[in-house]
Image 1 (tube, protein in one colour):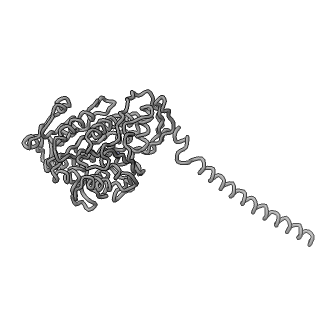
Image 2 (cartoon, protein in one colour):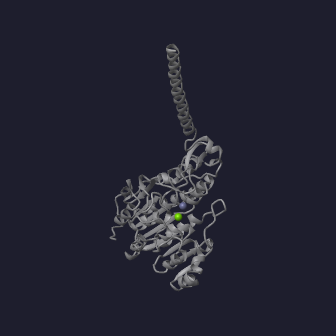
Image 3 (tube, protein in one colour):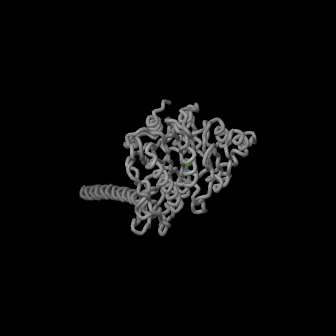
Length: 410
Ligand code: MG
Ligand code: ZN
């Protein structure tokens, strides 16, 4: 019996040890399985690409153009008489480099010698929208997403365009969206929400803006309480026109140019030279003011290409915007008293470039969101006082730097 007891005990001990090792083994393999699952699904895996959750696109064979060779600014330290602010909505570094690659390695924007970076977050969100982004440029204050020319508490803040007007300068705006859309609206209107486009239209009448060209006729024709502001504009002395061929004929006086009922067509749909021609028309009228001018031009639809996750749309809109940049730099180089600033309110689409060839113009990209991203965006400057825009700073500093360059007080 004692012998049997001993062997039984040995068996029990051995069994217990086996159970412990077995359970350890099972839990270890469970851990391994867990880790294996984790490793199999990183955020940007080929699996997601295959599932088409990330849209990988190959663009090649687009019509290219020859960028201009602009000489260095005549008076880099000189007085600033005119400022032209060019905003590529949603135009981050990858949008620019996608277009640069598709145009076989060169863009007009490369003529800018002063480069900076801006932090785009708004007062309430890490990822800004175009309203808060443009209000930061126009008013020098971070505000909530959706705000048009008002601060974080909803209080109206004077815009650079209004300050320029007060100082006797001529003012203008050109956009490929509706002229009442968030970006241009933030330079002229003061409303709690970007959605209030009829109220935004009525704010245009409260200013003395000299030239504005873009879409959005319907918001003026049927404004608040169905008031027809086109009549009010005419009574105020504006030439109110809705054909680009008529708009480009205007050489002097006040001009309200409506190139679309709401938004303008895309480049792919045949918008043609609307942005280039409208910008040149605006400059030719505004430059007649002896004190100078402030002009804001927006390439509005680079953003919409990003929202659509459509690389072809993004590149064609960026080409159009870059052609405007070429014309504007040409003017500034000859004028010698103009400061040109080119920037973006934010990046759109989380675009990455995963392949391409500058020799053939082939470019391969993938989007990671159909919204905006938070990434820092570039600023390019050319002309008098351009060096002010080098460095890394808040988007609100664009306003302060423009104000200082003009020598104006808020
Ligand atoms: Mg915009
Ligand atoms: Zn957007």
